[in-house]
Image (tube, rainbow, N blue to C red):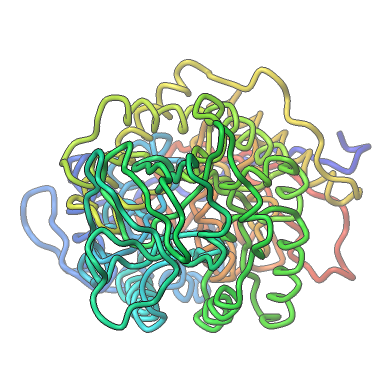
Length: 600
């Protein structure tokens, strides 16, 4: 391997003698909480992080402050470590509160790998409600610009940022553009309406000064009435309600409900004729409307971490948006995700994924444009393509639809979630379940518990891809990083390592490790807050923020000392460690290493 610029080092860390002082031993041990009580563990951990009172094994109480923690680490750090830097770094190792509680309370190899994204709406927008979702395991909060005002969304973003800074969570923010879809109006301010079988309704582009007439739905597309013919079918919200067109009268379309159901404000519309989707209407609409560009400017100014683009039809719109973001926001990067919800996007799936930073399989809208039986294979294809091209992928829409009204999911919904986890999607997304449902907290708990169970089953069954991952990188430095990460993941599986450590400034090697879907979690250490938040999207990554040094050995020593002192690792844990070149580019060499270390 040395001839190829790669060195594998096996280093056993012996500077820890395992003889912690009594106070340190109590602190280093996991919080004594039942593994299922993640929320309670988070509350206790939040108190501990702020100087706090700790329960001893005898039921007494012990006060531990930051200064005493630094003393614990200093006394048990490797001899070569700098005591002052250890004290400074102790308070600067930032990790998500839920993750830290999970690492303390449970086996390190049983942490959840699949991430959870929640759409924020009226049911979960307050500070307390957002904290409940974060405590339950929400990794990404999605704000949907289809609904709500920018003032409302701004308040949600402020609440999430406050949770991250004040409480220690690590919740990234994704902004979803409305897109130039054809959709209904806001139902005159009503939260919903019900269409019964055989009822006649009017779809219109007219504007009304007063209340909407009964059974009238406004549409945002001016050419709506001219394009429809008697006998056409209007499909609402992916098929939840259907109408047959009876006749067109000026700007109005008179329809008869053929499939009854619940109508929600701003639900999308699609049109079928003779059993085929009619595409002419959406083909003339731009992917990004003038409103979308204003929303994008809002997202940039508010510092969102991701922007999801609705109804992508070609890779050009993604390229254009990324160059626009780069010109407006040079100091930080924003990930651009392509949403696959239109039939046009399936004609150039790979080219879209190649230029995007990630993808979302929006199965609800997509299922309204392709035969239902094709949705599972399209989902699998997009997930496989994203993993092959090293792009994170979200599975979205109707995962737990029944939980909008009921406190438990159907067994079919659980099976659907389980299949997405088996396919090793990076994240699962709740839409209406969290935005307007009655039980958003329980929805998150279902995703969390199903993910944990299926991930464990896959590891036990050694469910692996039948084909190896294709080579991804072209330049020599990138190929070296790719091969190092592939080898590190394979070594971690073969040695049953407890974790893989990666030190990264931009997140590239962390992403390459995630692509391999190793059996153990990946601890990604970065010194950039925006990189840490973006890494929270990807499968298996536990992002930490800490100051990095150019010397990998120094980073490793500090990391071991801090993680052990805070109870997230213990004596005997086996770690595979890799690192990006952390020195300036003009001084960087191609030499990279894989280190195998055991805490002792």
